Amino acid sequence: MSHDDSSSSGAVDAEATLARVTRRLIPFLALCYCAAYLDRVNLSFAAATMNRELHFSPAVYGWGAGVFFIGYALLETPSNYILHRVGARLWIARIMVSWGIVSASMAFVRDETSFYALRFLLGAAEAGFMPGIILYLTYWFPQAQRARILAAFLFAVPFATVIGAPVSGAVLSYAEGLGGYRGWQWLFILEAMPALALGVVTWFYLTDRPASADWLSPAERRWLVARLASEAGAEAERAGAQENFSEILPALRDLRALGLGVAYFGVVLALYGLSMWLPQIVEGYGLDVVSAGLVTALPFLLGAGAMLLWGRRSDQRGERLWHTAAAACLAAAGLLAAAAAGSLTTAIAAICIAAIGVFAALPPFWAIVTGAFQGARAAIVIALVNSIGNLAGFFGPYLVGWIKETSGGYGPALLALATGPLVCAALIVYLGRDRTIMGRAHE
Image 1: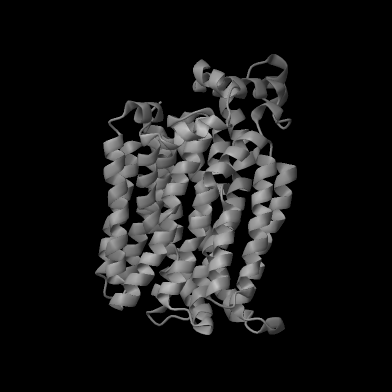
Image 2: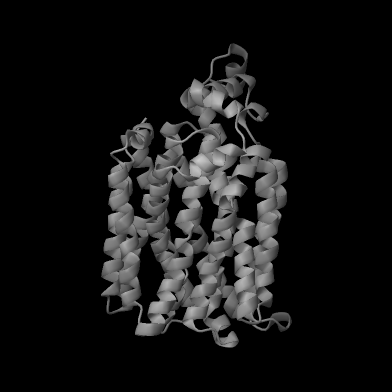
């Protein structure tokens, strides 16, 4: 059925409509998140030379890498609530422009104080972006398609490193001394530019809700609005009409949300513990920055593929719990193997297994979260879960730095990181007994 035929007859091809929404939103949003994640972790590529020149110890670097998540977590929930009230187009554009400015300013770090301050401000500027997009996608996609859609969006996380690792290595190598600036300074300046440009584009490109999507036919808009409203249910719709700030406190006290947040903490501990230190781990085997960038990209490339395949499988099976728990256990096994590795080859193979597990766990996990809550409660809970989880973005890098400084090696640090995914798996299985969470997630 053509687009025009569906409009004139009133009949709608549901699959074609959702495919049109996917093509319109997902590539652009994934590109935006790619820019966000790269600005968050490009510090890991700058670290070796920056730390040496500014005389930062592993503990100082670990603290600075992690303090980003303190600012991020503090402002996550209010930011997501504002997005729910004012719309994604305005709020996502604001977030992207502000974090681009702060990220570029990282080029002018001079000491520990400025390092900590700018990393904190970067987290505060970016707060609300990732959970805001996850919330935004619930406005457009029914629950049954959500794991694969979230996988396509979250694909940006590993893809940013796949692209960013070799590009960052090249910038560090070839821009060194250009215009009187060091390579690590150019890294922050150049990699902030996409966020600034995409922030401006966001204002003109995004559509807040399906009802105002003029790139869909009237029949398609009516079908999508009705489909999502029927899934939410009449009770949730009535609650949505009376949403106000008083929704925040009950959501913050929701033990289901807190449990999911702690489970996410476990996955993020492994994710950022690896992301922020892997280039330095690889360089420790004697590789130059360009080669280290290429080797660092491999685990993230495999993780990206696993994320897409596992998210699709979760949707096809209509199952979330065991898809999340099994992937988390695989991540823990990879980290345990990496801790015992004696060569670069075995270490990278084990880290590839860990990365596959970490990234594969993300789509079914977020399908659980987005399926369990509605309306303003969903906006707040998504942000709360992400805030709790991303506190591990502080503890993970700092933990690795502290253990490395006290033990002299990365093995014990990788052992510590392995506990995170195990905690995630155990909590998800435990929470699976609650049908208000898992019952909706299976629908």
